[in-house]
Length: 222
Ligand SMILES: [Zn+2]
Ligand SMILES: [Zn+2]
Image (cartoon, rainbow, N blue to C red; front, top):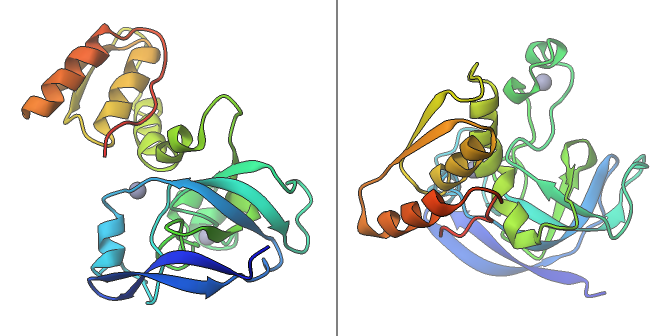
């Protein structure tokens, strides 16, 4: 295996460049992933601009990552080499701060944040915390699964926690990277789903999705 890998790194605010890095071994509780796909999220812009709170540079952005595990760090027993996994934005809670102890891990005060406190998926290789990775089902391609790690989980959890019941009316404003997934989740969850968007390009997508009634489509938005 090559001892180096390509990554796209923010070296200074506004400066995104391709670099060659040395492959490193995962630490205790970590895995090394050979990246197959990484979504592009608007939040990445805060890393590129150098304004994300807690960011240190240089940093590799990307927090919708799918790839295969190629090395296991010490103490990692539940994951296997070759297994396909995903990594999102909040990529490891400390488990000891007050929100964590209350079971509110998403508000951890010392989290590992992909592309902010740790290098993300704009790279051929990524080190991830084993406690935060998700298994990816075989019937999803890596490119289909990647946007679910941020845009997907954001819209799905919003619907799941909104106190809605089947048949309720859900309006999704904007058919962008998140909205197009929100529409599909809402339909599949049994809500009366209304979409609203302005641009002409969105209109054709809206027609396509209006005809859809069964499957969750992969993310196709740039
Ligand atoms: Zn995101
Ligand atoms: Zn915590």
